[in-house]
Each structure stands twice: as structure tokens, then as C-alpha cells.
Length: 136
Length: 388
Image 1 (tube, helix red, strand yellow):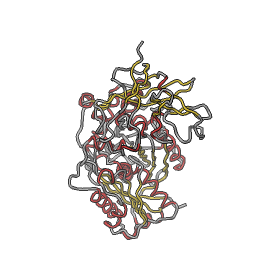
Image 2: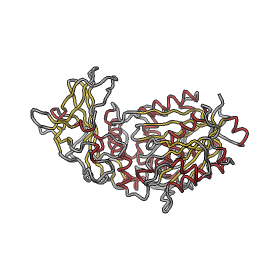
Image 3: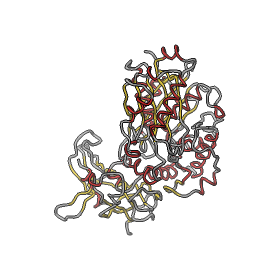
Image 4: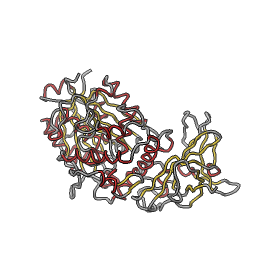
């Protein structure tokens, strides 16, 4: 399971997907792993970008590494996928949320400058999904 | 089975060791440790170096062999122990295993890191490189994990923000009496609470500094310790455990499963309960971590750890002193050295060698060394041979 596969494209729509993986016991993880919590290989995928999520907690980081926006608003959010909780960490569009708020993912082509950090740029994907409040 | 003893300990001054590199720091601590025990390098069977990132930070690899040569310890078997910030604790576990298995009769463990030549951003990025790709691309850092967890903890357990600040105040006060600490300066609560935000709600004084330093321990069977040392301490319990690599996959981010699992095993091995521990060195890389470990080690119920700092339990004159060394917060955090230095403090306290910060005849001490954001943990229990 490549690190590139957390963001995949839906062939029909060409839209990027926020891909979580489902395992035989019904559990779902983001990202996926070669073996899931039940010790088995994944049996399917779920595109989390089609769901909204609840903010579990958030922070605004002011001391950011090279190539990362400053300040960097981050949150852990929880999706409800058919009654199964699935958590993800991601950047917030802005620091305007509170615990319990509902947010939606939206795609960003480059979350940080791949050339500025210590990690080999070719070793992973750099696009992904930020979160913003759901408009009521 | 012969029990495993520690017969020597040392640490360099922690801080900005300008002009000195990892090679210098490791050799200083290693030589001092052998001198402390009165043991020659030719007696060393195994030599372990706890280090997270010498290649990334300094461009120096092959460190254990380098140290063996500098100490004239060849042909000792050498290995590098990398478990990120818990490399030191993992080194203790490896050293214990080497003696307990009979593979070695004298094992020198030296932990160290050289960091201050890097900018804060560069050093933070090296440490953050331990994260999963889906975390790293969002620019997550270890301090930001601390901010995320602190906000959740304060909200869930109705803990006051000030209680986190009091951890920093306490550990800075302890560090004043540690001549090897990076910061030997008291800070007041207002200073902590008014310092710049680093990862909301945590501020500058909620975080440990970037540090150069090294620390060392010398291990042997108790039967050998009785012959060569007037005093020694015993490793009565040691165990390591992991939690998820991806931090957000944990059901409860305020519980560190690695701390729970490793301490359960260490208590069982030592035939001890949390109530038996007289004092502890916890991995306060961030103030919130002192609360989480305090609870996950069984010293308080979940969500109650913050009350210990409010009641004075964890002060030096409290019933369970925490981080008498000043902790990572004040003493400093040279990644690979920190877990070793925690045990050095426990060793010195148990032998009555802690100077102005000496506790009143402690017999059982615990060290909890955390890597990543609880990703991997080693818990060690040390005690005097006479401990009841």
C-alpha cells in the first residue's frame, strides 16, 4: 500500500478522493494499512471527501518547519461512515473552528513545499484535503 | 537468575555545546561513566549508542564503532539504538537484555544528540520526519500534536490551563539545582502563561528546548557489581511497547497505550505497584505529557493527573516527586540522550548523589521515556538492593 494512495482519483469523475480503507471486520482506517485492526487485508475503500466530519480537537501551530505555511491550523476530525468512526488529521482552511463543529474536506494541490523539508520529495504525495466549516 | 545492576553513570552538561559534535559528547560521557565505575574500557563486552538522527542532523553515521575506537573499547560488540526520542529508554532495555541473557558481562550504554547547530525549524522537521506521510504533508510537528492533545485534555477533564503552566514552573525550579541542566533559572506562572503561542493552547514555556548532550550508564550482573562496586542500583523492571504510528487513529488521544502497556509489564517484572514508586522522571517534552504519563503509569485516575500539580504531590517535597532533575523541560532534550539521562537522575537519587536536589532516602524510582507522540515507550524501574 503506497503512501501515494491516500489521495486517489475517481476514474469516472477525475476528482481526487480522500481514500480510507475498509477491513473484513467492518472497521475503516485513514490512511490504509497492509493489515487492518483485525489483522486482515483491506477489502474495499471509502472516499471520505463525500462526507462531513466533526472536529475532535484543533490547534494553530506558529513554529512551522521549512516549507509549511505559518501559522498552520490543524485539526483531528471524525467522520461517521455508516456508523463507523474514522478519524483524520488535516490542515484547516482557517483557525475558525471549535471542538464539535462540523467541517467538510476540500482538495488542495500542494499542502506544503515538497522541496523544502527533509523528506525525499518523490517518496510521497503532497496534495490532500483541508477542512473548512460546513455552511449552514 | 543474576539480577542486572548499574555500577556507573554520567552525563555531560546539557545545552548549547558550540564547537563540540556528537563524537565529542559521546566520548565525554562514556569515559566519565567508566571512570565513575572504575572500570577499564577493555572490560566492555557490549557498547550501545542511543541516538535518533546523527546522520540527518550532522552527517555522521557509524557512531557506535566511532565511540568504541575513541574509548579504546574494541573488540566490543557495538550497535546503534534508534527509537526516536525514546532511543535512550530502548538502549536501557537492550543493555538489560545483553546482561540478563548472559551475552555480555559489562555493557556500556551511551546516549547522545547534537542539535543546536540547526535552526528550530530544521530540527523540528528532522523530528517530524518520524510521522506518517499523511501527517507529514500537512506540516504536523510534535509540538502541534501536543497542542491538539492539550486542548482536548483541558476540555474533556475540565482542567485549568494554569495547571500546565505549573508543570513548567516546577520543573524549572528543580532544574536550578541541577548543575548539568540547560536552564537553571526559575520562571513564574505569569511568564509561562504570557509567553508566545507555539501550538495553541500551548506556549513557549510548555516546550522543552533544543539541546546538545550525552549521558551514559554501565551495566553488569549483580554478582559482578558486588565485586567491583561499593554501591550500585538494580534494574528491577524494564519493558517497552508501541502505540499507533498514525496518531489520529487512536480512539483516545489523551491515553498513551505504550505507557500503559510498558509500565504494566515493568511493574509485573519488578513485582511492584505504582504505590511503591518513591519518585519518577517523566518525559515532559511538553507539559501536557507529564499529566498523560502520570495517569497512564497508574499514579492517578484518568483525567485526574492535573490535580497532582495543583496539590503539590509532584513537587520535590511532595509524596511523589516528578522530574527532580528539571525534566526535559529544564534539563534539556538531546533526543537520544534523554532516556539515559532520566535513569542517571534516578541512579543518583537512589545512591544519595543528587546534591541539592537530593530526596530523603528513596528506594524505588521510575523513568518513562517516550518516542514520537507516545508512538514507542520504555518504562524502567530502578531500585536499591536493600529496597523493600
